[in-house]
Amino acid sequence: MFLTIGSLKGSPGATTISVGLAALWPGEAAVMVEADPAGGDLAARFGGCVEPGLTTLAAAGRSGARAVLSEHAQLLPVGVSAVLAPPGDAAAAAVGALATSGRTVLAGNPVVVDLGRVSQGGAGMALAAASDMFLLVIRPTVEEQAQLAARLPWLVAATSGRLSLVLAGGGPYSARQITDAYGLPVAAHLAWHEGTAGVLSGRTTSRFWRSLRLARQLSVLAGDLEAAPVRPFVSRPAGATR
Image (tube, rainbow, N blue to C red):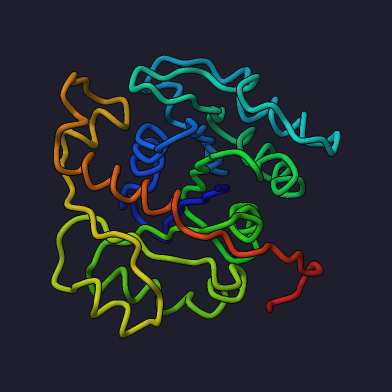
């Protein structure tokens, strides 16, 4: 499963969810790839190094061969093997390079790619379009639904039916209401827990985070995603919308 995760505005928890899913992925261990063009935060938060990392992975992808992700990854304290992005503009260059080879480099591995905020025509959306599934994280609020509605046509077109929502935290709208309104499946509605999120984002530590509700929900989601049938991938010419 080549899974991408992103958001539209604000910080609804895409990075936290990406780390959690990779940590709790069933079967063969998943690798988390931090591919936010705005720059990486996990190296600073967890005390890791940015090389080897996203920059070296992007460089390896230029050869056209499938990369060995473990050669570019580091083990985070939460038990996740992660390819970390550098801070600043270097991350955008690396994501841009990876966007041209992402399917070759990443497909076939259990991999969870954090795209940060996605934008129409951006490198993050190129990776989302190449992935087996794109999870868009939003809060179930009226403001975030307005952002979703404004971008829905190009999100659906770019992902060719591989787009699902993840609702993060509380709000006045249920998963059923949002699915009925936008015609998108909701893969999970996660009850946010700051303690668990703090561990997964490198801000706090806890030996017991896997037993907490958010971690249990992420574990269920990881199992559902791993068991989901993967649709055959069909490459589209550049500029195509469907």
